[in-house]
Image (tube, rainbow, N blue to C red; front, top):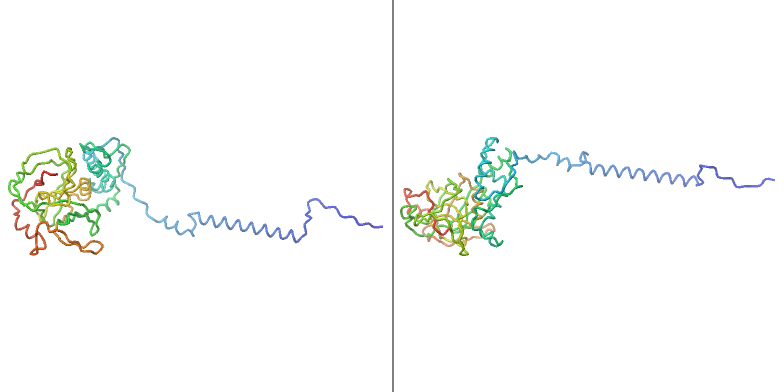
Length: 361
């Protein structure tokens, strides 16, 4: 008699039906293909060498910034009083090593942060910080750890091109000096100008028309260490009384001398220690700025910079509005410019080569 007994499972064989094992195999294969595809796509997105990465290809062809010709580390504290001697030493050393003519203004253009630092030596910038500056020459402008860059030839060429396009534009009744690059305004500087008066000045040796003269010219001299002379008495003085009535030593900030229409009228561009006088016709012909702005004008206006001095009673601002100014020299309806009146009352043979600014610096 045959009896039915269940068969024993053989070792290593699956007890699952064939159809189930087939489905499992398909699922594992699908997952494997999916993982490989994701890895390939991730690699293509992150690997800059892959041709499909267009942004990486663009970055690869961009020119690298030109490295500086040299980096000059500052090893000790440099004060305002030491600054120009320090600057001259660097210019003298690296002018012979560079393929271009290195000047102090080109060096400063390559290191604009220095001018920002010099501007903060302004007495009226320091006072709100609780710092009374009696002797500005002792203030630190460079410290150990600072680095000056000597520009490479391509960078120097670009900076020289910008310098060649920079000029100064002064509108007398607006009390505004604009630092221009072609037709673009880089900085606007509040100024004071000459008064409508005549006065005998010892420094000039004759009676002088104190109005600021108009015309076109250029910067012909930069005095980095000016001597202060009272134009009325001809005496030298070293102190100044500030707007807060406190006395300090005169600051050391460069003065600029322009020639106008080929003549030296003695109307310097220089700082005033009394910024309350800005926006007024109060000087003996000079163009006064704040101490901070005087540093910026020096930065942008080396010898040879073009200068325009005009007397326009109306201007159109950037918004298209017409701005009208007070006729501080009383040109009146007969003349729309002071050029004719100034030329008629001033003879070139009486031009002076010294500053004829007043004692209120």
